[in-house]
Image (cartoon, rainbow, N blue to C red):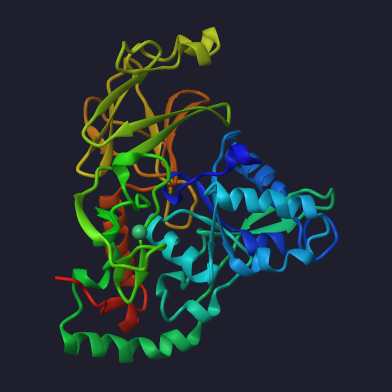
Length: 381
Ligand SMILES: [Zn+2]
């Protein structure tokens, strides 16, 4: 299982509310708590994504290990403690709050059975969400399926919406400041404690996203406000999917361009070794150019036979395949599929670039009720 555990939320394909999964008695073995339920969820994820290396970031309540006697198998408790020590589980007092904070920052889908009803005033973007929360469901054969939950719209929030909006108007807060976390994820952060490297992107390894306390990015460990360490450059991840299975992943740094094709040359992504000869013939030596600029990703057809693309819609479904106009940059968003030849697809992982997150939040803010607490943070000068 360790193979699938990411040491940072930003590198994971999915977030998992671990306490919720471990305690989900509708799946897996009997007993109040079992780590084998996580194994079932990982298997379901591999099936769902076609990606044998799909990665998850685990968040757990401290009470999960606090109640270790409820685990039927104490070896699982030792294993879980090891994961916490290795930074593979983020242990917090309130996992709900942390999961929602991370989800909002990274737009990564979450595996949980929780409807988060009591968090909706603070996190109005949950309202009406039909794609981001996946619930494990048992299948008759003992395996698990992941089903997207329709989070619905809770009426209490609807009632308060008008009140809140008018309060915001009064304070002049109906602007970009409705999405304060944009500023947080687009910057790098540093803890004032000299020896603390939890947020230091230059040291590599584990990087936490800041903990927001009263609107201020704060060190999880030291509780002190973090210092702004300048703008942060993103990396995106591309996946090559052949006949429905993810066979390779590549990273693309901000400011770079890569050619993808059969044999695109030294700086490119070569697919020839992954393709059967008849398929390889239909892929150009240099087929598409993918570039990451100003926090967004673009794709350009540079092939002989053309390229098709389909966009993923707001509700998770696909639009129709369309031919890419040759030699023209087009936005390539997470989930979009680019087809180089039948069965040969290039896609992006679910994580978004900071600039794309900012856009998503702006769109979201225009559509969902906003609570005063989310819109009026205490901001540092
Ligand atoms: Zn610190």
